[in-house]
Length: 537
Ligand code: NA7
Image (cartoon, rainbow, N blue to C red; front, side):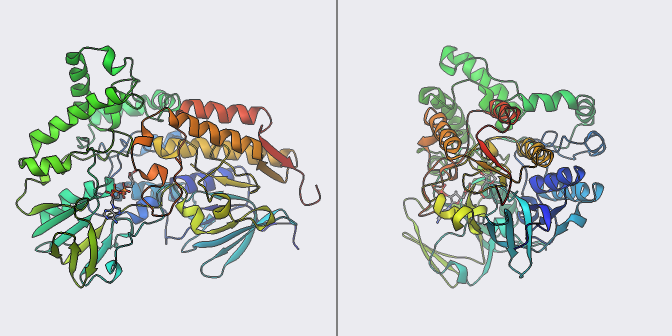
């Protein structure tokens, strides 16, 4: 058995996380191989090409901070970038740092087994390629494993069948067509207004109404861009010091400690600014139901003012979860789109979808004949991509078995029994509740330091201890138990996938505190990890 692996590190994925990992580890002189299932770089921005696909974080901070010249040279055209521009950015990063040469594309990893005798990871791809590496870095993203709902006959739909997360590369024209959209999550909310502009008729099949906030998207103001470029150091520092890795002013007051007029004024001011800033109105929006109810009332009034038909307005208003604890979509035209004569809302909570046959989607109350069916049902989030591979650690233990009750990790970086497996924005890290480029840079930088430490000290294996993993997982559970997140059926809990264990997959204790914790763990010689000398240890 070969003790010498073919690579120091294999990185899976070529999105924000993978590209930076390949760059960073390569700069440190490690032999890195990137494996990516798509034909090119981009990750989530490679696949999600549906009309209106856009980032819900503002462009100036949804970008890499690691290279000063890169952030000075690149100018975003919109406040919230659309998918083609983010894909161009990632392509530019790949060119600029010559990253494609380190990748093997169209390589879907199907198996990753830890070989204990040799202390190496053995990897196999769908096309039969095999390799070995000392360390395995999963940068597959939290929202990449596509969720197709289990609706009888769906995959045999007789018209054009589209999934938002597997959108064709060529433009899709809806002109003159009868279109259905299943879902009202962030993807659907972005796509629906654009599809409605073209379609002869659009039917939106809604199971759960969402609280949609305005983005107020617009072209980048050149003065703002100049200000950002002159102040990038401070902006990035604010992101690092914040709870969500965003440069927002933190809230100062509890919602119920101020007068009703002051509360309205605060909501109105942040509504006018747009986006997730709305949640920085008050300190207790995620922990106090009465406080949260005041924010709900504000948005409910907006829906009632905007949507002309009272019954449609009622159906579009969530009544089963607090605002913010199920990922709120952003859009500027979503609610008004339901005033168009060519758009119908079908409530599939009261009358569920039964099946699809030919071009007909049948619900418990009606039959809908459609030319196009857009499935906007999201992802098997957070753990889905990793568990879709056959990952096996010490003793041949399958990660899927280890996580049979839901994910357990140490800091969202490592898993007990899986030496030298590192997960970028892994389960029980701040991941999707932090601004993603900032979160991946923090993780990859930590991993880079760790790999350097291992090299410098002759450490062959580094592995979370059971005790550290149990303590971190319990802490993560305890933090979320004090919030309103458990009040929603969300993909944060795995609740969107039938049969998936319900466990909150994100650390909600705040990005800055988390980052400090990771720093301390490293400073204390990788406290909570067992460091081994190798096959003969
Ligand atoms: P989401 O947010 O998971 O939304 C999926 C939507 O599809 C949601 O409205 C679901 O309703 C609906 N859905 C799922 N399965 C069904 C079935 N079987 N019948 C009817 N409706 C269904 O995915 P997105 O792609 O929009 O967004 C994912 C994230 O990407 C987003 O949050 C951002 O972070 C970026 P449900 O709420 O489960 O009742």
